[in-house]
Length: 428
Image (cartoon, rainbow, N blue to C red; front, side):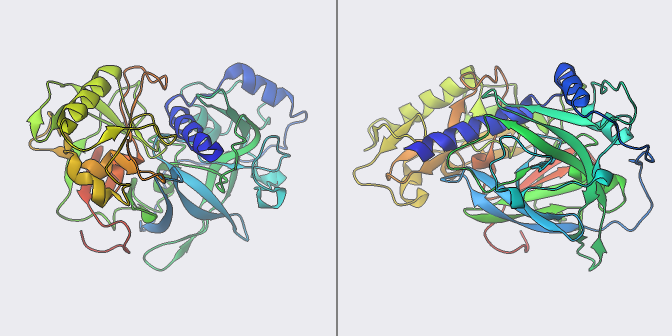
């Protein structure tokens, strides 16, 4: 079906986007040249910490792994605030929305686009522009030129636009209303992003590690600590910024990998276990990426996983079947209605992080399988080599479901705990 093809294309393009986010100097030069006259001089924006009482922000999440293929939050931007539905993405830094500047290739009606004013644009020499484009400084012929950005996608699509500043009204858990001015992308040229039917999302909420991410900006302004977390359920969940929602106990923590070349939420090395037993696969580093619907493994690990599952299914009443949802699927003696019907046929995988004592990320069947509209059960672990990821391993939404996952940038730790993400926030 056409919509199944759309979901698969979206699944790959979102994930690759966050892995190869970059600013292309030549394209940006064209963007700057097309602007014409620069904006009047404006005071550079401070991105240094400000004193204040730090609190937290709580946002409801909607979406699912299948059939939608994404999770999103709705955030108001501007004064008065206009709501925008954004994909939550821990793999990319820059938040961007479809923008009427005017827009080419946008998928939303014009009245639903962000409409910037002259005062919203950021200058090319502004510290925020430097932070967004790091480590490649923007090519500024005129210091008053507008700051540009470009995001490249794996399916040869791209988003080009300007960096802008606007108010993000946020209700803090201490009862106050904060109105920070945050930098984000005003995407006015989208190529090969016209998915059919188009999704209702207006853009991406970038939650990465750089200074350009929303979490980093809120922290630098003293609104919240540089900590955030998410809980992804069957059709809903929640996202929070700040440390107020971090449980005092019950979390499993592992250290983030630190390297100049790694800008993602990575951890490792880890050993792959299946049914509680070693598989012989060690030294696995992984990226936690909510911008990817499914989990992607490098060729060696993927083939091992597939062989283990096939061996485990030997003699069981499941048979290979073609399904447009995913490449590897099985059917039972009768259509499956839910994962509850299918999970007993499969065993649990786990990633045991060898740098920490007794730290495991458990992946039971519901964290790597889906049940499709045709009643088949399909493998939500894909071959990263076929997606152009090389040796990179990506833990996507399917493997993060049913878990409270916390990214503590203050202490460079990633933590998780099993949770009922479909309920309102409570104790875990």
